[in-house]
Length: 199
Length: 179
Image (cartoon, rainbow over all chains, first blue to last red; front, side):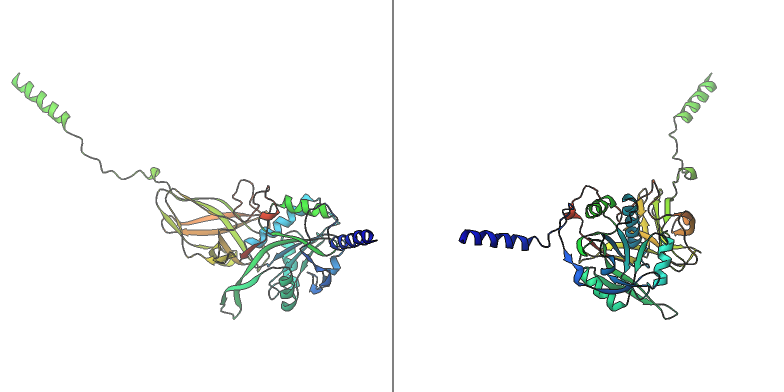
């Protein structure tokens, strides 16, 4: 009886340990289970988006940018486009880009950004939101954001840069963060391979 | 006969004179000027920003990039992306950019770039954007930059694009950047 109880307890403990273990072949750990989170965002058409809930059911390749950025962020966007191309423009993977500069990156600005990068009709979601909600999202996704070098223009508008983490994150179909990569400089074939393993 | 000998000695002496050094002006053809190569720029929506990348090939004399301008945008500044003391990446304006004689200075992603601020109209992939770079010695040089999302074939991809594909995930952590 004692042996049975020990084996049963061991099996129970093992099962509990494996509850959150990934069942795919990606080899990626679960870094954060986001399924308990809900961020009220809007897309480039000003439609409400609940993140990550609205994306549940398929992997998400999520890029972090701000459209004012001329150097790093365009490389991140180009990298994501290449990942998508290498995956064969899949319909079972969501590609999304979220800004961390919501004051300037309104839905219409995001839509223009999508257009200039040829993504207007690409089934690619561009996300923004209120400053508080975006700040909360960035904190959860471990994206550091700080304004720097602010100057005031003649018209009273504020000109500033943003210090930010350069990041693309991979989220699985169960809303779990599986990895965050250097956004602009990670070879796209690596992220494409990981994404493929989650499909 | 004595006269002929005198002439011979005179001619010999004249021929034996060491040649005086010639202080001729340098041949302009031998002075290599600063040149520019591989100009390309990121796309941008009207009102948005772009970065122009270019390779500066130093001439036979040291030169300095003093400024840049473009009618296609409201403001042009030379910027540099850099790593801060805390390990994040920052971006700052660069007042002047030296181009030493005979050396190459690459303005490339993740490093030096000409920031095009406030596009007057869309900067569309496949088109070109004009700019003028002014150097202390060479003066103004007009460039036409090809608009492309990434470095066109044969051009410098830079520090910010695509590191070694053989890295494992321990090398792939997100990088802090400042723009």
